[in-house]
Length: 169
Image 1: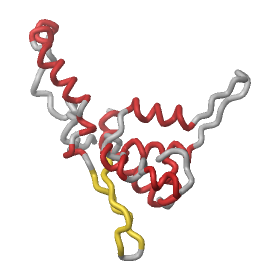
Image 2 (image 1 turned 60 degrees about the horizontal axis):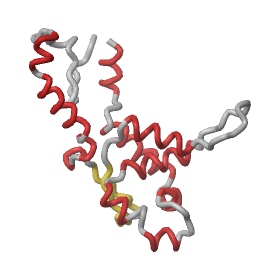
Image 3 (image 1 turned 60 degrees about the vertical axis):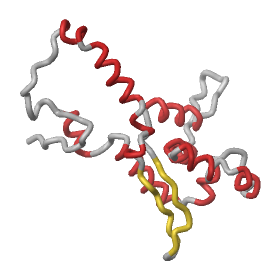
Image 4 (image 1 turned 90 degrees about the vertical axis):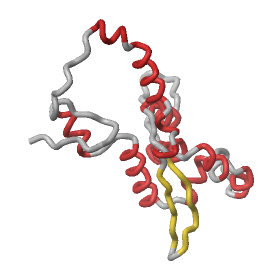
């Protein structure tokens, strides 16, 4: 039995077939609206209503707070490419550094304003002796904390059980 998809930005038409698919003529008539909707969807990840605040608490004190946003497929692919070394020898398959990938995903998902203040903070980069801001994540975020944050990133990026079930029908 299929569950009704409760994710607000998704619609499972196997649950409710009230609307018939648009004809080619209707699509052409509504092309401007469709384009506007596509352009609007492109900006969704950066809308404040899609942000989540992450608080890193040690003991009873919040030590760090920052906001994350959804990740696009393109951003995820870029993180994988950056975490996979380039190999000149075609016979050698490069191995992705999954720890680096996870840090890059968290870094990328951090809202720009917070990323500049926290991960790309020049003083922090210098004092922690790293080359790039994403490397600070490995120094200050515990592995379990990172896993929980990445679960939230997946959730707000559209990965959840209901989506999988809907996609499977």
